[in-house]
Length: 142
Image 1 (cartoon, helix red, strand yellow):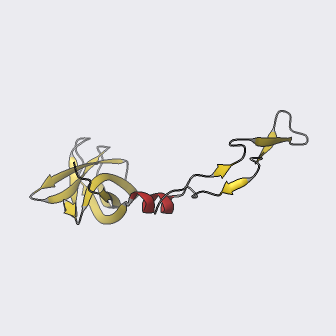
Image 2: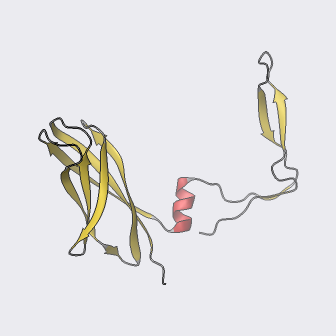
Image 3: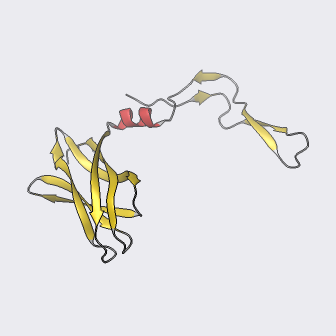
């Protein structure tokens, strides 16, 4: 998918209309004149398609005994380090239940990518569920 620019007669021009009864408050509307080309709407689906990103979610259960902040609680197996013509570009925690804050650290061992899940508090946690999103992008030559 190729992204297209919005082409208008007067880029960035807007009209401000005072909101009755609200001092220094205005409604704003585009006033760009003739629109020659609408352009690509910027949203997650279009940007994902344009940049060829692929998301894979992995959900696992985390159990902590009371211990030191920063110790690794578990590692989530994210599969092979290389997908067909793709490279791992990031990891996000996209969901966690019954858990305090976490942080993650990716690492590769024997060609497999793991997300190390680290604890952010010292208390015991049982049965916490955590979902990690791996973000893959097309590999580039160079």
